[in-house]
Image (tube, rainbow, N blue to C red; front, top):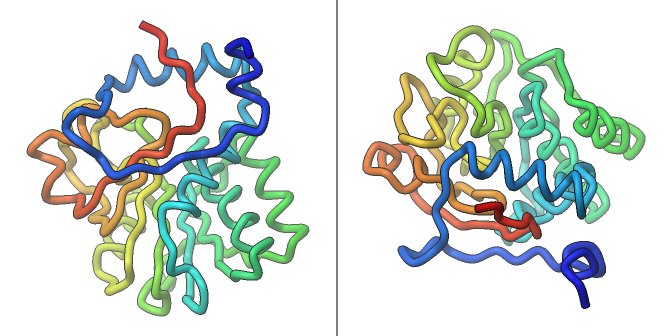
Length: 225
């Protein structure tokens, strides 16, 4: 079996708890590896679906819970849209809380699927009450984010942190720098599911105040070095 067949045929997403021996890479290397895999082996939509499956598989207490999925405008938000569809197909309801009016192309694809399946979608505003939910999935800002969080994203992060829900961050805690772990404001998670490979910022000392447990989902990205 060649590498393309290995990456595309019956790929099984695996989730494992972070170990000190795991491969840890920079955000830029992750970006290059993701782009290379998409260009040569696996379509971006498939990788997005695998990322959502990784989050779904990383947690085993979805059933009979009130679930909010907070989504931003990039591919991190797309992971959230894909997750909403996966949950619905498993007879688990969730509510999409849209923190941005924007959507990536692949994100729009999975939003449309979730919408057709009947997943509820609401825009985040000052009246949004995350206290109503048992689980909040954080898909607001991805590893490409740097700088200071502002606007709706800041308000949503603050509201999530004020809730008593179990919080799952997808790939990285929104607001955190993926290379350093630093943040002016970031989601505090009970579980962070890194996608592809663990990024350096997730295991730096700065990140410890934001992440209680870290796992990684292998979605078949070929590492470029």
